[in-house]
Amino acid sequence: MPDYVLPKAPRRRGRPRGGASDARARILEAAAHEFSEHGYDAATMRGIAARAGVDAALLHHYFGGKSELFMEVVDFPIRPDRDLPSILDGPRDEVGERVVRYILETWERPEVRRRGIAVLRAAIGNRLTTPLLAEFLARELLPRIAGTVEGEDSALRAALAGSQIAGLLLGRYVLRVRPLVEASVDELVTRVGATIQAYLGA
Image 1: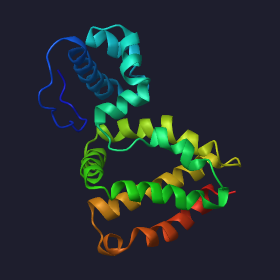
Image 2 (image 1 turned 60 degrees about the vertical axis):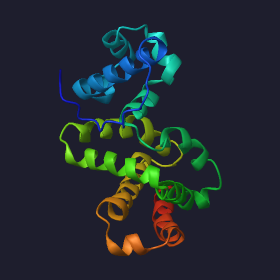
Image 3 (image 1 turned 135 degrees about the vertical axis):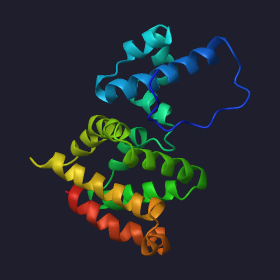
């Protein structure tokens, strides 16, 4: 059995054995192994189901799709894959500030920040986890952003916006660069939002 390269979620107390809870736990364990061994793109719902010893339909029943299952495995504290459409849907001249405000106001919640920092550290500190999360971003998030941007360079502009957000999160919450830590959310929304707007705006 391989070592997990994904950050483990805190173990829930009192989880009952057998039945639906046992099946769900086996699916999550199997998914962690499949994602770690094969990467996000190559891992399949069918392969995860076979490893867990359950019908593939049960995965869709519990988790919906592969992106939802992946986010559950890494226990990421926010769901940008779900929230992104509503964030991007609105006046184009405000999209930069909406993106930054959503990220920062969510990460300011202590329970989100603690888990988010753990995931970020795993993403940048492990040679296996880094490409796994990069595959998820490339497959599930960046194309959705690029789809709202006009021009032949839409993929590059979406990636640049993503890198700007990643740098902000690392600087404020992981590296704790003092000016970034001391700045208010509103100030960062205004300043960083303008940069994101330059990439994504009409």
